[in-house]
Image (cartoon, rainbow, N blue to C red; front, side, top):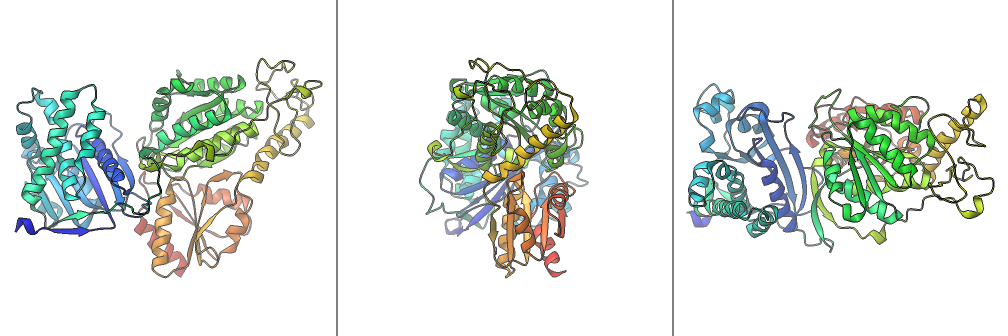
Amino acid sequence: MADEMIVKELDDVVVRFSGDSGDGMQLAGNMFSNISATSGNDISTFPDYPADIRAPQGTLTGVSGFQVHIGSGKVYTPGDKCDVLVAMNPAALKTQYKYCKPQAVIIIDTDSFTKKDLEKAQFATDRPFEELGIRNEVVEAAISTMCKESLKDSGLDAKSIGRTKNMFALGLVCWLFHRDISIGEKLLRDKFAKKPAIAEANVKVLTDGYNFGANTHASVSMSYRVPGKEQKEKGRYMDINGNKATAYGLIAAAEKAGLQLYLGSYPITPATDILHELAKHKSLGVKTVQCEDEIAGCASAVGASFAGALAVTSTSGPGVCLKSEAMNLAVIAELPLVVVDVQRGGPSTGLPTKSEQTDLLQALFGRNGESPMPVIAASSPTDCFDAAYMACKVALEHMTPVVLLTDAYIANGSAAWKLPVLEDYPAICPPYVTPDMAEGWTPFQRNPENLVRYWATPGTEGFMHRIGGLEKSNETGAISTEPENHQLMTELRAGKVERIADVLPPLEVEGDADDAELLIVGFGGTYGHLHSAMDELRRQGRKVALAHLRWINPLPKNTADVLRKYPKVVVAEQNMGQLAGYLRMKVEGVRLHPFNQVKGQPFVVQELVEAFTNIIEE
């Protein structure tokens, strides 16, 4: 009987929305994430979209996906495979079915499964489920037809009506998981505040999708409920992606330091949203310039830094290549600069919408000459705020350019973020000159403890000076080609970066820190997957620990002690072994087991568990 449907309570669930690039799957996924976060669930998301600006409709290369993992407790990853797959056309079904769990529910729009649609998706027969060997529960709904019927009196044209089918699918998923669609209605009215007719049309279709599930029970044997957290820390929360969190972290650091924020940038996937977000905040004194090319973006930021601003430039791997000359100008001039590198698949144009960790050695060494530069890596969408803040703090307090590494996975992925209290964050105190230094001052006069030169911004009376790209005398600040001076300046610039380690927190070890048989080492956006793999191995009775690096240059002072403590150490990274090679260079006498993937996709936790188990049992 329909009214006897079972409601199953789950600790967590994974939903994957997929369809053509124009089907609005990213919006539907984002809204489901927001609705779930507002309901008290922890969330982790993974947008997975094609590089094609607009692939032919209904084709395999044009499928756009959005996966969200919601849980009652802490959620570290978007999940390996999904419990529910929304496939808006045959191409989505064919390319995304591999992400389904064996018991997953599949929701399809039957209106998009015509003979022509099946041919575009390269199905050989008109029985796609049999062809793929699918035996899952399938919810077949004529979504496009029902949207047309729902909005036949709305006055909207057919194209606008067609764009609402993502909201019907979202309504159906909300019913399946007992979500409160009034939250979705508010989100829609906020998003389309300037287009109330579009807002109300989408609200109606969302409601109709929910009611379709409620009235028909959608041909499934049960519905699901994922309770919200009971112990959630009090405060204001929002669903935030990594690029927005990075932008907010930069703004917060500028406010804390009492400086204007300047961003010189050039659009590049997947970093452009940082420019977009910062451009919205002129009221906070943020200045953004979309420059004619990458080197201009960086060079203008170096000029802004010389003028006394908190200067930032944002890009991805190909842009770092182009910026390297201007980055080196900041190195030799010893000016604060934050270079945000949102890593993507390479080389060349490579996989511009996919994620990798292949820029690490470029960030560390990819410049001419001896040009040491601090490197920090964010570990999650929400951690991008803290990492950006700390990158600014180190850049300003140590008068150096700093590279902030994020990646497409955490830049576009999102999580529930508790709005921070700025008073809780450490002060940012640039090493400004003081009036008593004026007599006999030179541009490279330094603090003897940390080797940081003092900062005289233009217009500071008594501190007129010049700096530039030619090597300068440590004593006078005048251009110098003296061999001994160049040796000294090279050592001073390196020593300044090395001494940053004196103020960094020690490398933290999670899990079985005292007696692990295996230590997992990683950096950046792989944190959630590595932590989940550690948790699973510990559930299986293994002794496993995790050391996830935030600061890569300089390394925390206890890094060597940590790596030498454990009998086996695996370094897991989304490249061909860049961190492992760097650690071998910095820490002698440690055998490191590499785990490397370069697929443009996040790690799969189960694959990590199997690989790490094999290392333990070797």
